[in-house]
Amino acid sequence: MANLNTERQLTAVEQQLLNHAAELVPYLQKFGPVIDEERYIPDEVIQKISDAGLFKLGTPKEYGGHDISIRAMVEIVSEMAKGNGSVGWVVQIINGNNYNASLSLPSDVLDSIYNEVEEIRFCSVLLASKAVVKKVDGGYLVEEGLWRFGSGSKHATHALLNLRDGKSMQEGKSMEMMLAVVPMSDVTIADDWYTMSLRGSASNSLAMRNMFIPDKYVITQEMNPGGSLPVAELKGRDRYKPYAQLIISITTGISAILGLARGAVEYFAEIAPLKGIAMTVHPSQAAVGHIQYKVGLAAMKVESAHLHISRTIDNLERHVQHIQPFDLKEMAQLQTDLTYAAMLCWEAVDMLMAESGGSGIADSNRMSQIFRDIRGGANHALTTASTGLELYGRMLMGLPPQHVMTLGAASLIKS
Image (cartoon, rainbow, N blue to C red; front, side, top):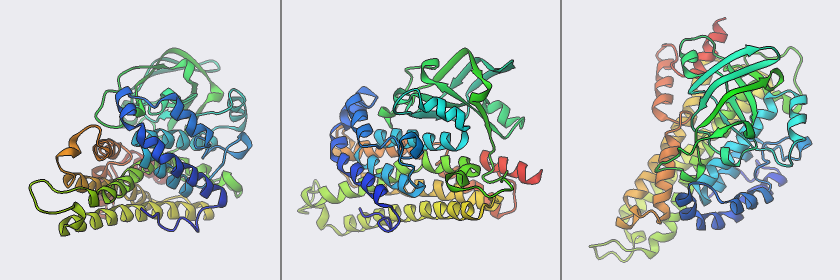
């Protein structure tokens, strides 16, 4: 399925990385049943991805990374997800978090981290389920902490963990995230990721108890993109720093969902000419008018989703170029663009699954795996359509936002 307008938007290096990702797709598809059965991505697959440079998409060049554009990252991760949803999800999470860390952490902290091992991979959980944290001399003591859904943690070297939990956010104590950089050797990974969807992402819970984190490894991050813009004009990559929160919502949420939907359309179109319809005289699915209609409609939904994602990136780039903060309506539109794109992708796959016949329910059927994986991905907090559409509707009717990121922006704009 052709990507929209990417050939003229990607640099030569970015196109080469996209080609590397495309070359891995058949290899990843073969591992689908194994990844689901074992509930993690095998080490040999992780090594293949690493050898292709696909864990360094968002890593700065000074630390051996490719420092590609956000648009290129979406396209490359999307291609990986066509091979396997869990792989796409983990590649998405690690690269998005690497990008966020490089924008958010001081240079001395980045220097110390990237001097530790050859390839740094960040996972993250941006809201604690429970965080009992005390400020002490020189840093913070995490007496007890629990973070659910640590996607990519099995393959990460470090974690970015919010030291604030949902209770403190709901009570309005602070609309800022307090992110701690923690080596995975200091984190306990629970074996509690038993799901129908994205099984190989190994999105297990993370826990810490009585762990000291030095001050320099804890940063605050505003919820309003561009809300605290510097007086002096930022240069180069630094221009993206004020927008880190919005960037992570793009780079760690939608790419794998888009890739799964693209893969579903391609797979269905590939097998339809070779597959009949039980209890009918039709020689193949491809010869039936309503199947042709469904494939066309599914493809248009996926392409429409890509247009919404592209609009989000265009809006971000425009604000970065002019160093402008987002107002509340712009924030709402961008969050809704991403969630609506996820809904369109899910609808496309659901439509094709309904036409896949009885064999579609087999675990070994690729469409079945795509169906399960995209359902889980579309349920993520960053991509839940009902939350995004409620937000947009509220803003259009002059009501205050209910979305945490937009609430954070509202409090900062009001102040």
